[in-house]
Amino acid sequence: MAELFDLPAIIGGSGLQAMPGLDITERVDIDTAWGKPSSLITVGQLGGQKVLFLARHSDEHGIPPHKVNYRANIAALAELGASCIFAFNAVGGINDGLGAGSLVVPQQIVDYTWGREHTYSDSSDVALNYVDFTEPYDAELRTALIDAAVQSGCDIARQGVYGATQGPRLESAAEITRMERDGCDIVGMTGMPEAGLAREKNLPYACLALVVNPAAGKSGRLISFEEITQVMAERMPLVNTVLAEACNSALVTQKHT
Ligand code: HPA
Image (cartoon, rainbow, N blue to C red; front, side):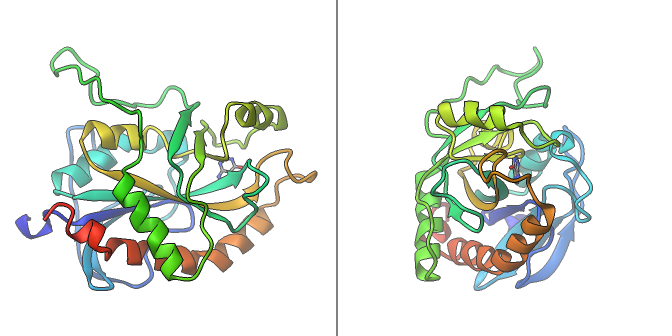
């Protein structure tokens, strides 16, 4: 497995169960101390770069956000020697400037999730690891994503605060108002504990978020799943391009080799 070492990894979320353009060379079945990851880890060539790919909700989009084994997912990528992680997340837009279809590279997180297995430091057998989380996302990976979007000729919000909610239900309008007061720009269900676990494993991590709907109460209408599907269909090709470009960026390929 040594040849898999030091590869960038992509964690695909809703709408990204498989990576178009990924020339698959291998699928790795790995077990970790925390159980099996959501899917086999796909190894393949994306553009010029060999990458790892993991479908967060499984290949069939079967695992709901609160049931994802985030610890196994991050541990599996760490054990395979991933150099860094690009996470893709579909989100709701809270900030009025972030309409459906917007791409965002968040720089901060507020965690509203509960009851998820969120740390590797959870027994007296292992050393307690108080990780710094002041800047939850890796600055170079964020730059790689932003540069990739600019090169692809698309607008991208260069920062934003990701509010991570429990799901799987969407939020009430009052919850979104509270999140807005807290400073959140986007809302999703899978940003945490994933980012925190990556930090515990010392894996540089950044998120590319696609706004697929205005958050609850933001549009004066109920959230429409037809509209979400339509936004996904229109924007996923761009998400793929940005992720592929970012994986091929010198900021990423030279980072850990
Ligand atoms: N809320 C939470 N998660 C989401 C949303 C939302 O509005 N849209 C996509 N994922």
